[in-house]
Image (cartoon, rainbow, N blue to C red):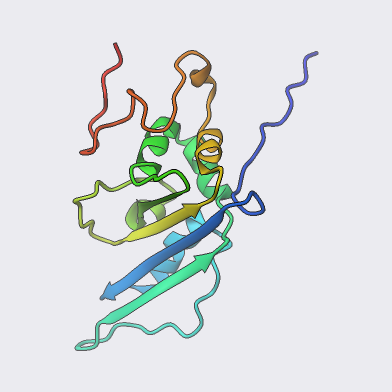
Length: 173
């Protein structure tokens, strides 16, 4: 009987990456709901201390930040939801060789889904911003989003099969 070796699971931590995850709470955002959305994707996101709640006439405006938070659950969800090529494209729109920043929809995150807003969108419910930085970030991103289909149709960052800037897919010929 053939035993398949377990798949390598990346998490970003201790992999020579700088990881920063942050989100802004504005207006009437519920701190509990924002925290729940963060923890669904990033269970190790740190506590933020005293949390102010919005009240009538006193809107909330805070930024929550976590550094070196594991990406393991986020990456696992990308694999389970089978959106690895989309993720590679969305996560590298702002890629400059050693750094990238991308956003995730908080409303999708709260139910365990990964969704990437388009650049021009101001999504209801806010976003979680993820910044990744490292000398070998290109290799790490391609490895983190790898799937068996790439044996047949190889992909790389900003290749001819990447989605367009407005989020439209490129048709394979």
